[in-house]
Length: 206
Image (cartoon, rainbow, N blue to C red; front, side, top):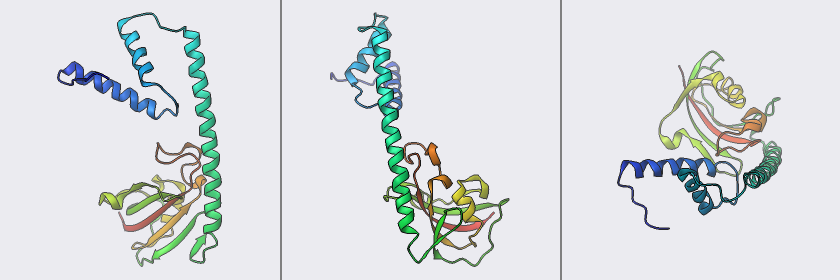
């Protein structure tokens, strides 16, 4: 690829547009996309030339890629659900883990002695969130900044756990997918049907 300069406003804006398009495509789930072909398509549109291939052929190819992506996503979701169920089944056998009727599991790291928040309260917490394979997806601890939110403003597993935790407690939560983000997942970090593991420290009731 020839050297591209980013000196003028137009060059910088053009690069930004390409960057945004690339980020969208990277998160689309479409595999095997060809950068040169994408560039050729953009160039064709910008100069107003006729497409190099028939529109029907383009649409058929796009449909095929979307079908493949949907199949891959379905397989990944199925695998995530199975992995989560297996993890929680094994985890429930550990003597230090308490299993609630909802399926939520927790392990007390530090037992607090303060008040227990009710559903109408806001709380301040530190947390560290991982997938069951240990992949970290979010951590207020790493940022060095506690989070504040309403007790009922978070996922179901958190809502249930927070209303059992005295202030000063640090618990490790093992959350089934149906008490987390379920079939939706959450962005690129949390896939659909993923069970989640959180270390949560309840700092204060606001």
